[in-house]
Amino acid sequence: MEKCKNDIDKAGNISLSVFQIQLSEKFVKLGKMSTSHLLKASVKSFLKYLGKNDAKLNDITAENMMAYEQWLRGEGRMNNTISTYIRMIRLMYNRAVEQKLIRRKDDVFKNVFTKVEINHARAIDVCEIHQLLFTPVTSKYLRNIQAIAKLQYFLCGMPLVDVSQLERQRLAECAIDYYRRKTGVHIKIGIEPAVADLVSWWGRHYKAPNLNTPEGWQDYQYLLHSYNMGLKKLAQKTGVSANVSSYSLRHGWAQISKRAGIPMEMISEMLGHSSLETTKIYLKSFDENELQKANRRNIEFLCRRKKK
Image (cartoon, rainbow, N blue to C red):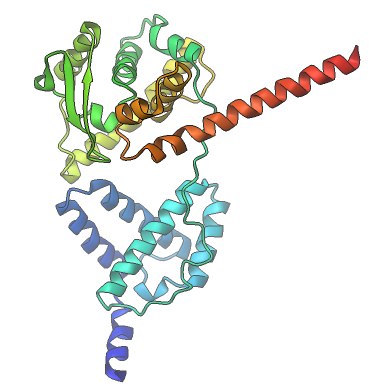
């Protein structure tokens, strides 16, 4: 027993960076590029906090994790970013325990933030979406961004990662037939001729990256970054004040669908959510925003009456 503990203690001195590379390679082979990318980013951030070029598995302690969280807050990181980094470190920790490289201590992640907040910025409304998609722009660059935004929105707020995989041969019988990358849910969307033209335009101008390779995943990350930067410029040009991103366009589609009276079950299916509960959580923050606006109008009305 004592020998086993000593062996584990020695194993805990394994390089954090080396272990991260080994895990990342395994996730790449499984086609989980996002997890592999996040692991690398999280360890890089953790090492920056430690002020070291490398660290040991034994450096993942309760004290370090609490101090790391506070350091991230000092760096101006949002709660969900903090949670993502810490959960990635926790993933490495759990894998190291499973491989008997370190001994589990139950308090390591007990007092740090690991939740996911549903806290969206102001939803982009129907008027702003109309402005964004249909206000004429002269720049070819912004016209291309606008075309991608139309494509994403008209395909039920399709995530850009799925848009990136669209190919003209998937367009059959006036429908797009695909499996959502994140959830694996099968979706078949009937489309209008104008949308079919956009899909064909996309197929002519953009080559689908192979998301199962590190190179393809990097190509997609570049596309996502470029598109989001382009959307901000398009919003500025078209007079949209909301903070627009590929994510907010998807949320905007969901919110407008709800206001249009489309059943929640149908919205959930068209978004490709794995459960109806996910859709309810997805839209809850917008309901809260509307309640807050209603309460504000009530108070303003009361104050106006009092002045009279």
